[in-house]
Image (tube, rainbow, N blue to C red; front, side, top):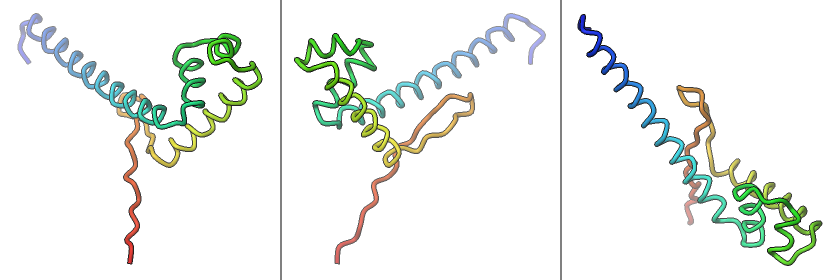
Length: 115
């Protein structure tokens, strides 16, 4: 490198920005992947999951909005999370990135040849 501290500082800042941009892109891709799995859930599961885990609502509020009992909300939420976990296990390959963040790649669907 150069003896000029300004150039070295600028180079370090540029490298940090590149790493930050890459991390942002990876997070964005993961969020899109997760969103696609949530969007594929049946509506009754998707609604309680989004209201609880994304909108951070309490079960009582979800019950009021959806016209359900709190017990029904709890059951649907449990089933929605179980179904989402199952879909993640079959559809995603999770791993740790170089900067130790969780990342995922969608698994390729298995195609069977018909005779």
